[in-house]
Image (cartoon, rainbow, N blue to C red; front, side, top):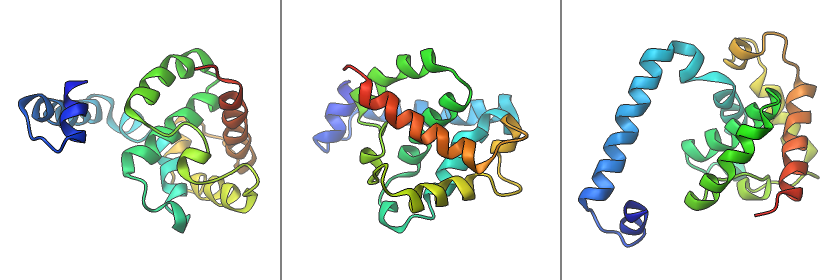
Length: 153
């Protein structure tokens, strides 16, 4: 938490440096040990779909992937893991709803665009879900939104 406070205050401290270094090293290790199956997974395909929506370009890569992780957990039916992640997401202000990424459930054209791009041939979502469809991704995004509406903080 000290590193977050330091970041918010614009202070370059040892605590902040350690967190940044840990993130870089951990990302490299996960990518190296898990190869393509951990490094990219379904969350990155959701991220890739989100890059096609111009008014959410301001989101950072990690924010898009964070949202994609939640969608992936819904696709995997890992609701307990999803619920365990939510307090962390809240503490570091990661997006967990469509509103957090600048969309609403009524923007079906944009959601469909994300889902369509996420399942294009060659996307990494197929490493986890070999037979994934646009409808399944769209349903997972909708289900996540419903879960978040009922989530008690």
